Image (cartoon, rainbow, N blue to C red; front, side, top):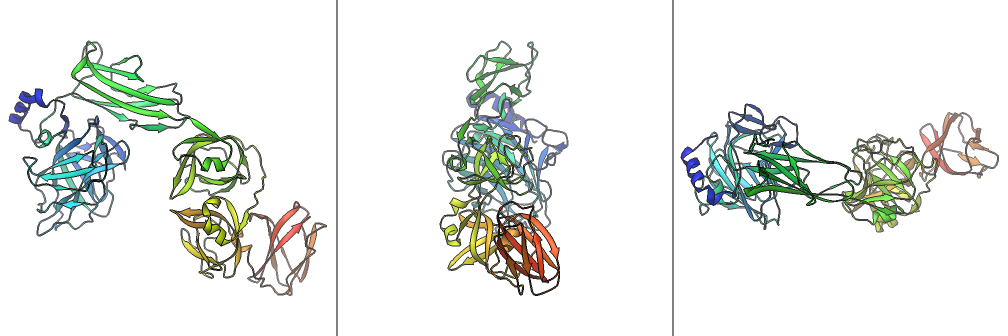
Length: 605
């Protein structure tokens, strides 16, 4: 907030030379409280309201607050600079935090961060020093001279957008002074300056003042209050893609040093065009609401004009491009999986829900005769409640992936189930088959034969990997679903034929059971003495169950997907089991007697 009025006067004298090179200036001359809501500052991450301004300085903290805020500006090509005065509050001892607490950055239209300044431990006997990184969260180069708590310094940062290289000066008066540089991390275009806080365990407070952004070193080395009009589009992000379901988009604008008003009472007003169409006059800075949009590409150009409608000299304008996507129709899930990530698709054929995870992301597995895929619906777009084995037709959404697993993010609710009570017969494969071509089984229910858990006898825990083997083949069993009924149960100690969902994690194959029945029903060993079932196949809707003990037995019958369809308790050594309520088909019979278990395939005709 320090002002140099002689330099302000000098700047006014030479403004005809440098006008347009200074992009913006900010002296944080706001009332104490939240920074966002003042000027054109906007929150883009964290808890709104906890990035503060105090005594005319931005207070950037690490340790409790988490809000990140940014200032948008019109992109320029080539080199771009930011500079500000900063000091670090006394921590009571030399700084010893981890080297990833960057507090100031350039930002692109999304979440790409460049030219990051870190607070880092001192190199010698000082309190702290600073580092610079072109794009990474840790410093790629460190300032060799230690700095002192409570002392104000001016940091000047250059970012070469062509090479993606950041360069840092401290208290420099010329670009030829000592500097340090990050690595050349590749081209990147920036359009925002951001202050970043962190709720990490590292406690530090950095006070920032007298921010300048420009295109040359001389633009920013000394703070000068800017009087040039500025115009920026704060939303949507440039080159955004919207769902085909989108019919309206709000274009946010921010204006500084220019009074937008009607009737000649201000400095002028705003004109905007959509796709170079007829210009629309706008006499306020509220969002531009575009409606009745259809799938297409759009370019919105906004310009400041004087009260006669003429362009300023030099012209002050900004443009944002966005697209409303269209759907590509595909017949089945195999064709969907073969599509391009980021594109939108409509599956015209019917798919069947094989599993509902019930987690916070509303994830559901679906499959058809061709393939399977995971629906990831964190926004809760699908509001219709489906049961397992319900058919769904007309599914629309965007193809993506997470950790190399293909995902489908729905864009619309498909509506009521188009069929119910479908059946899915898992494909039977060996573990070697799965390991050789796991992509062919991703998100599908499969039965893998003769599998042994290395940790047999231990207890299943959530979100853990377990080694499984079959012959000479080794793979991974993942307990992905924390609410699954096998969490906390004993891991089978003998070989099983397991019914699972095929998957992977960043290219490494893994499988996940959806329920306990899919694990224990394939147990190879029958531990119950005298266990027998006859007749099998069952012809008259009843069968005999015999064991050598009169103790109570729990009898369960599951379909081939592991869903329980019948349960009862019996005593004695010879019991008749009535299965008249079950349809013809193949089932799994499970019997538990005094902690011992036996299972058997049961065929009902």
